[in-house]
Image (cartoon, rainbow over all chains, first blue to last red; front, side):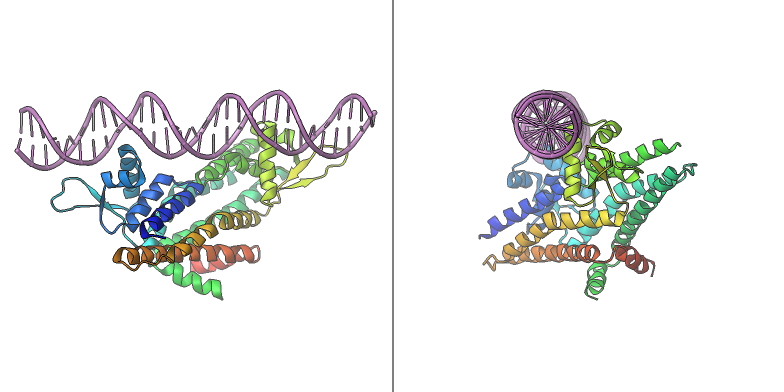
Length: 167
Length: 167
DNA sequence: TTTTATTTTCAATAATTATTGAAAGTTTTA
DNA sequence: TAAAACTTTCAATAATTATTGAAAATAAAA
C-alpha cells in the first residue's frame, strides 16, 4: 500500500467510527486530514482533499476550533487562513470527552436528580426512584472517570488505567 | 410533579441522550419504558405508551433482545408476548459497551494496525505512522478499560473507579 | 383443516441531519 | 476610497436514518 492510499483509508476509517458515535463524519475527516498533514492546510486544500464544499469546510473547521483541537496558523506571504491539528491525540481525546461530558452527560444528571424529588411514596414511585438512582450512579461514575481523565496529566489515563487493567 | 409525568420526562431525557451517542432514540425509549414499568408490557402497550407503530416496536424490541438487555416473559392466560427489562443498569451499560466495542472499536484497531505495515520510510510516512501509533494507543487503552469493565463483576466499575476517583 | 390472533417484514414515506453554493460580509491591498 | 481576496452565512437540497402500515408469515385455537 502506498502512503497516500493509507492516509485516505485512515481518514475514511476515522470518519465512519465518528458517524457511529454521533459525531459528524466530515468533522472527523477534516481533523484526521490535518493530523496526518505535514503542513498547515488552507480551506482550498481541505476542499480538494476531501472533495467537499467551501461552506462545509468552513463550518466543520470552526467547530473543530470551538472544540479546541484545531487552530489557525499564519503562513508567511499568504493572506488566507491555514489550519493545523496538534499531534497529541490524548489532547484530542480529552477535549472531546470534556465537551461531550458538559454538553450531554451533565444535563442528564441534572434531570435525573430533579426527578428524584417527586413527592410520591407509592410502590410504583419507589420503584421508579430506585431505577433513577441506579441510573444516576452509572452516569455519575462514568462522568467522574471522564472528569478525572481530563483534569489529569496528559498521560494519566494511559499510565494509571494500564496498571489497573493489568492487576 | 406527578409520577407519570416524571416517567415520561425520564423516557424522553434518555431518548435524547441516546440520539446524541448514535443510538436509536426509540430503542432507548422502549428500554426506559420497560425499566420503569412494574409489569411486563405487550407490543400494544408499548405502542400506546410511546405512540409509535407496531413495526417500530417490533424492530426495536428485537434489537434490545439481541443486545441481551430485554427478554420475553410469558403471562398466564395471555397468548401474546410480553417484554421485560431487568432492572440492573450496570448490566445495560456492560452490554452496550460490549457490543459497541466489538462492532466499532475493534475493527478500527485492525485497520490502524494494518496501516502500520506500509513499506515506506520517508519523513512523511514516518510521521504518519507516529500519528497512527498514538491513535492506536488511545484506542487500545479505551478498549482495554471497556474490556475490563464488562468482564468484571457487576459492580466492579462502580466500586473500583469510585475509589480511584476519590483518592 | 380453517379461522383467528399475533408477529414479522419491508417498500414507501417521513424526519432528521449534512452539504452545497451563491450572496452577503469582512479584511486587506492598491 | 474602490476593488480584490477571502470568509461566513444560511436557505435550498441532498443524503441518511427512522418510522409507518399493510401484506405475508407464523402460531394457536376452534
